Amino acid sequence: MHKTIDPNILYFGTPVVLISTLNEDGSANLAPMSSAWWLNQSCMLGMSSKSQTMLNLQREHECVLNLPSSNLVSSVDRLALLTGRNPVPEAKEEMGYRYEPDKFGTCGLTSGSADLVKAPLVKECPVQLEAQFVKSHSFEEPSSLVATEVKILRVHIEEELLMGGKKNYINPEEWRPLIMNFCEFFSLGSKIHPSRLAKPFMDANYNN
Image (cartoon, rainbow, N blue to C red; front, side, top):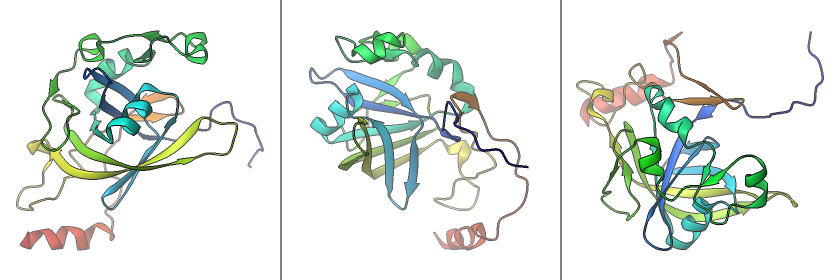
């Protein structure tokens, strides 16, 4: 039996992304988010237009999407109520956010140099995606939320995640992303069934 409800949170599980951008003074900003999905070489990010990350992204037109594995959950959680905005926006202040200029140091993660963008990588993240801003799409007013499209320019993958003998193929059985599910942290379990959809992609990699 189904019931009709008005849920407090409408936030079905998606991977956590640590978005690194550059502030106006050239310092690094690092922000966790989990409203993200990928299609071909593009990614759509859902964020507030008032966030420091969005201000940086619209000004610098670049970022790095760092995907943490589940074992980095403590570091990610330490970023949860921090903001790079100073002064802290009133709405965030009411939620308990505080300004933090050194997010990398606070959460115990290490910045590294990217190849094509000036924003830093997060060295501990097994997946690092250098990206370029394309455009933003506003949600219905009076919301400050925007869906922002970015183009993936370069992909860095930890070698242990690559499938042996298949160049450019990431082994889904080795990837353990951190998942945000109704604002709680989860990860993936074991594979429950082989997928016919995956076979043509795997076959194509025999010759790549």
